[in-house]
Image (cartoon, rainbow, N blue to C red):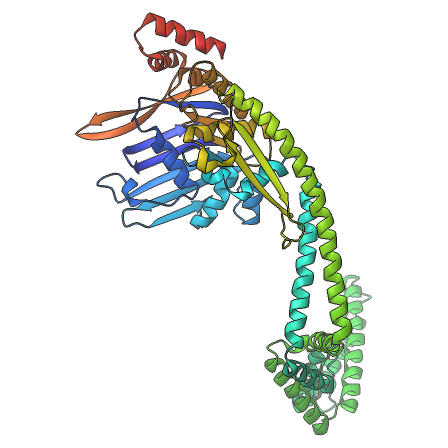
Length: 552
């Protein structure tokens, strides 16, 4: 849900801060008041291409920001988590436009690309208006209209099986590429032979390094052991052991006189035991430790060979055993080309067959949904004043086509506004107002999906009035029940159905034209709707406005 919109130095807006509530909000104002500027600002926040001409005269940059509240489990929140941009369930999008023609964007305070804005924007807001055909004509949009009504397990199964098939295709492609290069097999044989000759065991490199360092410093090690042994127990001079024995003898002579010395005596006895054990261990070390130049030379050669191979393969020495196993498996696979190719081709064929079964099931489900949607949309269009209009949703299965993650179907929405006119693509036969109403009818007929929950309608009331306008108003309230709806409208019947209403108007300040937006209370709404009916000062218009508001 859109909670707030902030605009500074944009077009004729100096500074504007708006807050929004759930439900249906009508945006009204005189023709030419600048209502579309709000939609332009929202479009830029959602990744539309920037235009430096939209920056207010005399300003270096324009600043736009919007704050959204995201539902738990929404696609937008999932996208933010994938991008490591989530901040609980609140989202702040910000964009700066420079007079130099550059722009910068942030998502939750972190720098973002315009592509990321656009990707996120499609999950946040749908803007329906004069360019509606650009969205409705996207194959992805048309597919989503159907797929949000089928069992979600069907499109998911198609995606999963397509990924399995794609993995098989890539494995076979890699295999063919390697098999097509005999030099690659020769190189693999040489590399495997080198690694097999080395025959480095897991963990061996660390053990070799430790042993090599010990042998390289054997003289230093023996000298240190000798010094330690001499310090502990040397007959020619006072040693640690002799001094300790002297201390024990002194305490033992008087420990009966003072019970506190019993603990001291015990500690000295324990120290003597530890000293004796240390002396014995040092003597054993002196007896066994010898320099081994031949072994040291062997270790140096093996370590150097290991380091050379690791550097050659651009890996760590400890990773060489795993690399050897991997290269050996790869070589075995290539040397067994015929059988390996048969296995890969069989796996790819089985994956393709499984995908076709799933794609066919999805096609059948889509056709059932399309038939129901055609009937529901026709009924909705009739209520919207388009009784003679006909919408056709073609689902053309192409079982022999290249597999895709979305199935085998070509989906096309065709439209005919008048009897006798063959249905044709929307953009070629529908006006802006018709496109908005078609979109509204499709949205209501398709029911709640997992798409954007903020919807903006522009020109939805073009060319309609009277009872049809009231139907549009009721439809917009239905749309808002699933999230939030905004409608730029000139029709009193539509505005009166809204939960909230804002008025856009221009004013002159110091020879500058400025745009402001006012949130209307009940009394102000009554007067604004009376203006839309023709005369804000007429008792009759005011009474009619009150009647419309009561019907809401």
